Length: 523
Image (cartoon, rainbow, N blue to C red):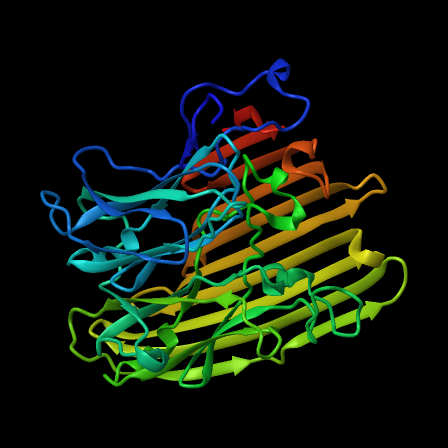
C-alpha cells in the first residue's frame, strides 16, 4: 500500500497529502488506502474495555461463527459502544457485501473496497450503543462477506472486528430490548412497550439489475435492465397486513459501481462502507402490539419485478419500556395512505429517454395510556422521486439525473408541550458513462446525501442540524484490455459538511490517480 495511512473513522494518520509532483500520469499497481471525509466517532475519555467479535479470512460464502462474551471490568451500562472493522486485501477482487450479526441482531452492513495488486487496508467505525441490550449477555456471532477466490480473482478479505466499551451513562437512553423477527416474520414485543423503532438494512445488491435499480426502464424500452414500473423503489413495512411505514431506499453505489472502479479506489461513495438502516417509528402500532401475542411484520420493496431477487432487508426492532406499568394499552387511530403515484414515460430517439415521476404519502397515529398519562404519537412521511435517464444504442452513453426526497414528521403529544422532529432527506445522483471510438470508458458522476433535521417543543425550535455529503468523480480507462494496459486516470473528491446547534464539521478530500492530494478542514 502507498505510504500514508488508512482512514480510521475519517481521521488521517501519518503523512499528509501528496504534492502535484508526486501524482503519477496514470494509475499504477498501488494507491492510497480508502479514505472518507465523514466525521470520526466521538469517544469518551477514560477507561475502556475491548472485545474481539470476529477475526476471519473470507474466501467463499462460508460464514464466520463465534461467541461474544460481555467485557470484564466495564460493568453492563456504557456511555458508548464503538464497533471497529479493520480489513486488508490485495490482488484482484470485486466489491463484496457483508453483514455482522450478534445474537441475530444485525449491527453492521458493509461493502468492501476493490484492492490494488500490492494491497490495501481500510477501517470502518460505527457507534453501536443503541444495541447495548444485546451486548449485556453472551451471544452467537455470525459474519459473512461472501467472496469468490480463484485463479483470476485472488483477493482474500482479511477482517477483524472489535467492540470497545466506555462505562457511564449514555447521552440518550438506549433501547431496553433489541429484538429480531421470529419464524414467519413474527414479532412479539413486551406488553409495556411505549416506543417501538424498526431498523431495516435495505440494499439492492447481488450483481443483477436490482443493484442498479435506479437505472431500470419500462419493459417496452430497449435497455438491459427492465421493470414494468420503471426505476421507482419504495421500502414498505406492514404490521398484520396494515401499512405501517414507507421509505425511499438510499441509492447505494458500491466500489465497482457505474462500470468504473477507478472512481472509488480511494474515496468511496456515501454510505458504501457503513450502510445506514432505514428507521420506522412503529409506536402508533404499540397499542396493537402490546397484547403479548406474535404479530406479522412484512417487508417489501415496491417496483421489483415479480419473481426477481436482489434485495436484502433484515429487520431489528428496538423497544423502550414503561417502567411504571406491566401493560401499556393503546389504540391505532389513523392509518391513512395516499395513492402511490408512479409514472415512467419512454421516448424513443437518439438518445433514448425515460422520464420518471413518483411519490407516496402515509400518516399513522396512535395513543398509549402510559404510567405518565396518555401519549399520542403521529408519524407522517412523504416520498418523491424524479429522474431523467438517457442512453444511446448499445448503451455506449448512459446517463441519469435523479433526485429522491423522504420527508418525515414525528410528533409526540403528552407529558407537556408536543414535541416534533421533522427530517427532510434528499439523495441525488447525476452522471453519465460513455465509451468513445477509442474504447476509452469515461464516467463522470456526482452523488449527494443530505438531511435537515428540526426539533420543536410546543412550536418552538429546540434543536437543528444539516448534513451535506457530496462525492464527485471523473475517471477514464481503456476497455477490453488486460488490467496493466488500461491506462486509467481519475479524480474523485468528497466534501462532508455537518452543522447545527451542536457545532460545525466541514472536511474535504481529493484523490488523483490514486494519490491523496488534498485534505482540508473548513470549520
